[in-house]
Length: 443
Ligand code: 5AD
Ligand code: SF4
Figure (cartoon, rainbow, N blue to C red):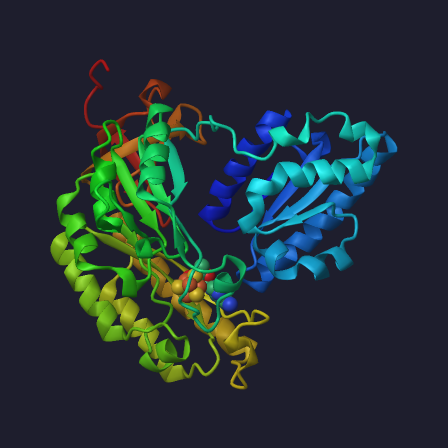
């Protein structure tokens, strides 16, 4: 399984693996060892989609070499490239056996069976009877100390530049019951932190156990009642869907981490309108003020696009100004990439590549400065860090602050799995170094 793109793809890959486990499939380290190769793809920008085709070129060689040994692996392309470019993809890469969009993963076992039959009897006999494939397995693989949980999919916002409404479809929410059950199971399997996922996660809505309407603030409170679930995060949110109750939840729910990814894309009202974002820069400022009132230590991150059709120098300056005024702990920023089928791709006011490149560099320098400053502001402080893994250097363990900053520390790996106060000794743009505040007490 090779996964690109957003965290929802990471989650989906896990679910596909769960679906395939009863068929006898388990993950391999390399494509060379695999009986099936699934590419879980991303279509969000041109570069992301192009990676799929270059990877397919590499995999074709592996597939042919294995076929010569009588063990031709099944090649499947899943995710948003599959959804958006299915027919074209097969024309360009006819050696692909399965193409499946994000909405069809529950049918993967049936597709594998069909593909195996087409590829020859040898592989077909490796599989059990088809009627066993058509439901998800009861027990899914544990995700570890931190877990993803998709609660919402799709998007009805139709931002001018974005393929998501076309590849992931209309907004839909999983039921509160299903979400709570999956969360309890993840915690029982050892997860202490859950990140709720959705393309428009804060548009999540459902009915609570009494049949009353429930939204993300309510869900966060219910999740926080699960013993052992210490950290809750959610991503990605749209500014329009941050309702009062969710903002209040940031004040009231201790497990809700004080870090919010809240993409604004641009700081220019003109471009926000062209992007069909349905909010102004003032709306964003007001929202940030209310969030910080509710949770003074809340840190923000965002996505930015430079070079959207029609973006002038003044529009770009307005984006820089918004960044200065808000102050971001981190951010993702991109050069506008025309996506086939989206309204912005047809605009006649495309921005020259060199201009967009220069704007991106300027913007990223500013965001880097802010990230440095945010990280440096933690030096000397005692911060709760959730240690989750062995560090890169010998004797190191690694984890995350409440604000999602990566932390490393020289400490015994017996501390992995603990959330503990540590002293931040050093900061770089991308990580913090910590020291133990005190010798840990016995667990
Ligand atoms: N070009 C550049 N960036 C894009 N994004 C989405 N579509 C495009 C595009 N066509 C960015 C947005 C979004 C993030 C996931 O990717 O900033 O929030
Ligand atoms: Fe894309 Fe806009 Fe929906 Fe986000 S809100 S997924 S950018 S259409």
